[in-house]
Image (cartoon, rainbow, N blue to C red):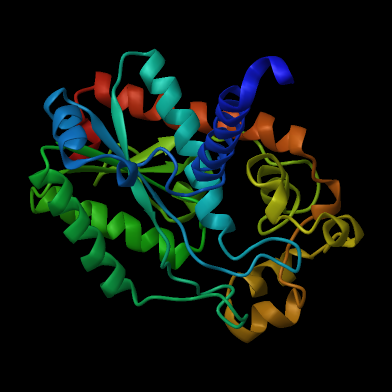
Length: 302
C-alpha cells in the first residue's frame, strides 16, 4: 500500500465512501417513488410533456395483507407493474411519465382490520380530479390509471372519476382494468374511459384473491425485505367455499370472521420466480391495452 502514498490512500477511501452513499441514496425497486415525476424537476416534466408523453398512475391503498405482507403491498405491486409497462411502451416508441402512486383507497372488504385506511369515495374522486387538472396544466394530454387494489368500491371510484374527467374534458383519462375485474364491475371496455387488459389466469385451485400466492410472489420479487417469509411459509390454504367467498366480499366484520388472519389463498406456495414471471405478463398486458388505445385514437374516452 505504500506505493499509493497518503494522498492515494485518501482518494481510494473517499471513492469508497462516495460509492456507498450513492448506493444508499439510490431508490430501490420497492420504492413507490422510484422512476416517478417526483424525482424529476419541473423542467424535466415540461420537456417530456412537450414531446407528447402520456402519464401512468397507480392507485393503490394502505391495507392489511395478512401477517406476512406490509400494508403498502397494493402500492408496491402496481408500481412494479407500471415500471414494466413503461419499459414495454418505450420499446414501442411511446414516451411516458409516471405519477407518484395514490395510497389512500377505499377499503370495504378489509375495513375491520387495523391498518386498512379507508377514504370516502367522494373525497378520492375529487382528489383524482385535482391530480388530473394538475397534469393537464403541466401539458399532459392523456393519463392511464391502474389499480393494485381490487376492492369493488375502490375500483368503482376510479372508474367514476375517470368518466368525470372525460365528460368534463379535464384530460383524456383511462382506467386500464384487468378484464376479470372490469367485468365484475360491469364496465364495458371502450366506454366511459374503461380499457380492459387481457389478464393472465390465476393459479389453479381455490380463489387466490388477497395476500395469497400471487401477491406474496409479487412482493418476493419486488421487495423481499418486506416479506415475513417464515410466516408466509407456515400459513395454510384458506380453502373457502363459494358461500364463504361471497360473504368475504361483503367486507367488514363478516370478512374478518371468515379470514381472521387477513389473507385468502395460498401464500406458502409463493416464490419470487413466480412473481417475476407474472409481473412481466401483467406489465405487458397493460402496455398492450395502452398501445392499442393509442393506435385506435382513444375511442375509449367516449
